[in-house]
Amino acid sequence: MAQVKDPVCGMVIDSKTAKYKSEFEGQTYYFCAPGCKTAFDKEPRRYAHPQQDQHRHHGHS
Image 1 (cartoon, rainbow, N blue to C red):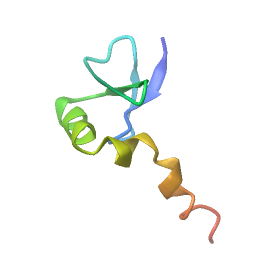
Image 2: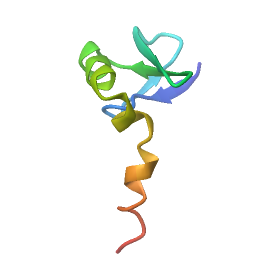
Image 3: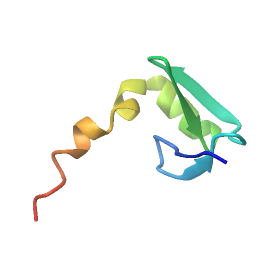
């Protein structure tokens, strides 16, 4: 079992049983539902590189 995180909603799912997936920049992304896959397919860069956005929010307490 390989657990991966849905890049859109953050749900942890099993990549072996995930019904929905997309490829972007040579990497496969897995989704829990068709709505998440659709959102990713519309704006893949927004979800494929979330670390770039999250760095601004961490460490500031």
